Length: 498
Ligand code: HEM
Image (cartoon, rainbow, N blue to C red; front, side, top):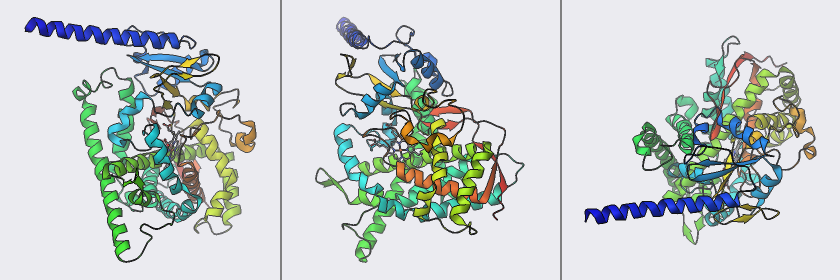
């Protein structure tokens, strides 16, 4: 019996290794047209990427030596690293490469198969269902919410932080404000995160961003069988309890309100009016049936995460850029004066947000240098023909380095210089060379929402404060959402509005 078991185990192991070896050999042959980054036997390049502050520059160095393309090995997984425009255009517009790469699997427990993670067939249905939630007429209704919540943020800054000598990490203030905004607008459930000060939810989301990236590159945490041996496994469990209980309470609260509205004959339950995100989810059907609570939670978790963490990073880094560039801040203020005249405290309108053309250039330039999503990944389960007989093999991921594409000196001379005038002539920027919201059919569904929200918040801060340099540059780390190890530091002075 014992001999039989050992023979069986050895046989199984040999079959597994032979399968790995054969799959590896086939993929390597098909990838022969892309330079491979030399690595160690078996573990490949994994040891180069253990620090989130350096792995993007390392990948860029490898890719730029090889015309914007190379591939790396992470144990038995291969990943094409891409900054080459032709290739990016091909991948992002291909209807055969719509799935997300292997690395997104580390999001699954958190975000389920919501829009970000959904596989091709489900994604098409979900995207079609959710697109109306970003209609112009819906976004217009959110302007007051943007305005009120940025006022609360400015009041807090006024009370707690205004002192032109002290250095302030602006990030937590912005994060609470964007969390309030996404809950009140997309979910229709105000949660008052700013007034409660601390939000376990925000801390849990931040920690999950770190955990997900560390699992991609850690030789222990990446394996589901070994992961429970690490502290992060337990931290992840705790974080997910906090996050999921928050989203479930938001969903249940809104569901109750909708039912009450229906009983009282208010609202438009089951009607034709365009609905905000959560109302749409609660009243939609997919494959002829209503969505389950699990499916709704996956979408809500996805939107809470994508809709608050991305914008809080983007707003914080833009405020930092403005604090460092007095000339740019002056022009932005001139525009605010032109729009608001003497009354800096009145509410902004949708039309006025659209009119903030210079502020839009500032935001675009800030997202170029500090893209909230520094990289995205794609995958196909079939071989895909690229050009001249070249193949992107089935099961090989493509990692698109957004943060490096945006810094190409051929397109953006002196790329680290903050210069919003680069975007005065958008026609001069070639397609697929500026990708903060990704591109193609799986681009960011919330980009118009994000730009409007950013304008509303930044405009309010500019009208109330002079942003001054703190003398401390952010230490950038790529933790799925761009983050700074030392916070995003500015100093705030009182703005005299004449
Ligand atoms: C400055 C702010 C934002 C930036 C830079 C940004 C960037 C991106 C990027 C690069 C992607 C592609 C991700 C990938 O392929 O892995 C994406 C997808 C997505 N974003 Fe955004 N985003 C922002 C704000 C928002 C907001 C405010 C929302 C919701 C209200 C949102 C919802 C989503 C969703 C649901 C997806 C998945 C889309 C799909 O796969 O069809 N994003 N975003």
